[in-house]
Amino acid sequence: MELKSTPMGQRLAQHPYNRVKLLNAGIEVSGEKHQYLIPFNELIDIFCKKGIVWGELEFLLPDNKVVRLHGTDWEETQQFYRYLYQTWQIWSQEMSEITAQVLEKQLSSIQDIIQSDKWIKQNQLAGIQQAIQESFSALPLPLERLAQFDNCKVHYQRCLQWLQQGKALIAQENEQWITRMLTEHAEFFTTIETSPLNESQCKAVINGEDNILVLAGAGSGKTSVLVARAGWLLRRKLATSEQILLFGFWT
Image (cartoon, rainbow, N blue to C red):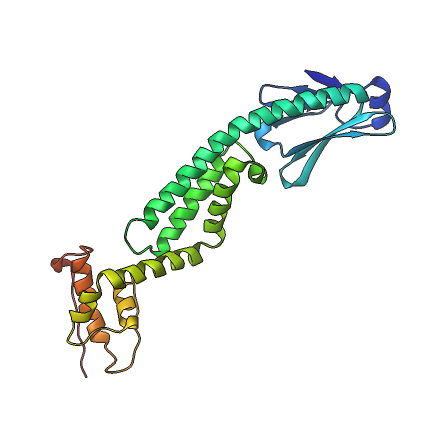
């Protein structure tokens, strides 16, 4: 299906494009010296407008770029617009199903990390965010349109949260995990040393980052934290006894 500017409209409009053609999954806007191919997966919106005499079509692209076709017969413009818009919407709905599956799979992989019964390390966030960005790049719909689809918008917003608030989300998940560990392993933290560990000491023991710096005054229980940390690694099977080496310094 094709729409062309009228001879008079083309002459008066003085625009580089005078026709638009519907393709299998996109449109081609062209003129005597110019041609612009717009795949459906780059199309943000379509507008049909009426000038004083002729019709006008506007194609909105990412970054607010607009491609216009002027000088078309108004009745033909409306007819072409209705058919094009319907075709585009049908395609979009089909692609939204694929998009929803991709986003759901991505969130499922994040949920697997959360439910792994382990401390989530800060360096894991980079991997999570990279995977989200790669998923976004593979989507058949522009990101700007995802909020329009009920089957996509919730998953998309959740992925955005991990991109924009990832550190806070990891801190929240780790805090909940710590609370659970303190409850499930209360006896360990009570008996690992001669005196029960306090909450700050317990959190230092549970912390699963690769490098942990414990700063405290003399006699505050730093050695107890180290002993408990070694016991915690063994208890959780995060290390074997052969992999643990403790140094003590006295003055």
